[in-house]
Length: 188
Image (tube, rainbow, N blue to C red):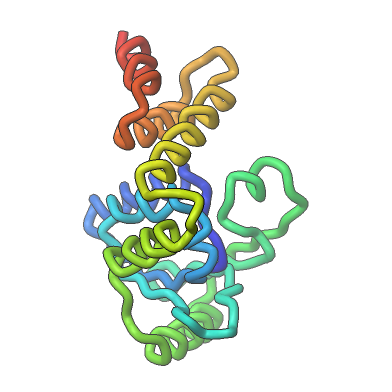
């Protein structure tokens, strides 16, 4: 998967995992490193995943195989932008003979690349931040929290919804004081 920045989809992955469904994913490492919030969210989802590592090839596939029976594929990036604003296509195919071809491609790539834990990805991200001479890790965390807080405010449209709550909770976990206050207000 090239990129996954849609928190609703991440929530769906969490729910699927909590119900006992095994999830395997391959992410484009550069995209994952560019989206700090996603790293934090994936840390809360118990999925088996790898990244393409230092490969020059991008992980540009966008498909999902469910139980060897159903394949979902298309140009659709698994992002909020793709879901709400882009011109995208996505198709669901219920044909095991098609699904097996997508599974074969997934397995080929899975076997080719080495495993990376979420901890390794997080460590790479921290090293990336530390190596930026103008920022320190604490500042990066504060910026992430503020970004999530602002996204939550933009997503409210004067009513509480799951995306806004999700972003506000993530900002709160990162220590954003105002996010904690908003969550207290929303709890009533």
